[in-house]
Image: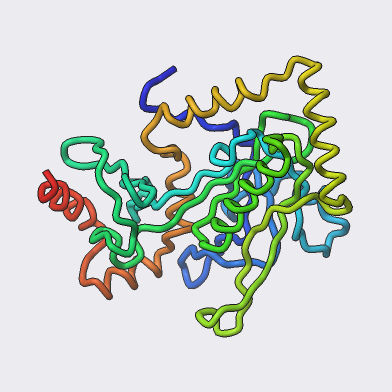
Length: 295
């Protein structure tokens, strides 16, 4: 195994609740009130739709607001990883990833492990540069039981809800999280900051049409069937843990452009640069100065 390269679950496509549109000559993210499932192929008009995007809709005009899924692993943190992440706004590459206690940061002296004070107290996080960033891998359908679709988010509501649900489901299922029939569901809420406009976030629930008791019974049956067939879930979780820990950062350079476009659109870069009196390119200088003060 190549050291320094995070080995992540194979990805067949992406799940999003928005898309990138072109407006006044700029490519900007646009929120939506439904899921979109795309392939890993990008055309001139954006990501190409995955066949499942249409298969899961009841009709051409129906909005996709729920997706039946299973999880790959029994450990919640393997299915859903959430960190405070500082991205380079031009390349989209992660520069600093932390959990509120410690972080891994690219410095002039290479990769270092340093204290992480969380974005509210970190001088590098001013102007919204550091975001909570979550990645959820789910299985859709039965075609590839080890292939997943990834949902990426920087939304507090989705991150908090998904993390809670995963730990709760693991607890009540007797550590059979990977066997539960679940469903991604889109929910909306309004806050004072949204001025009455709904904010949509992602939740994870028992699959539609099943009670909690029925879902738990189904998980027990599937777990027994897998064990009889020789399926070793513990070994799979262990292999996944080793793969994630093999690299400093999870996301590859191939995903950098898409993340920069989705989470750091051009308008936000210009607004931040104006309000702070800095250009995005000065981020590297700030990192080097901070690293020098901590050494």
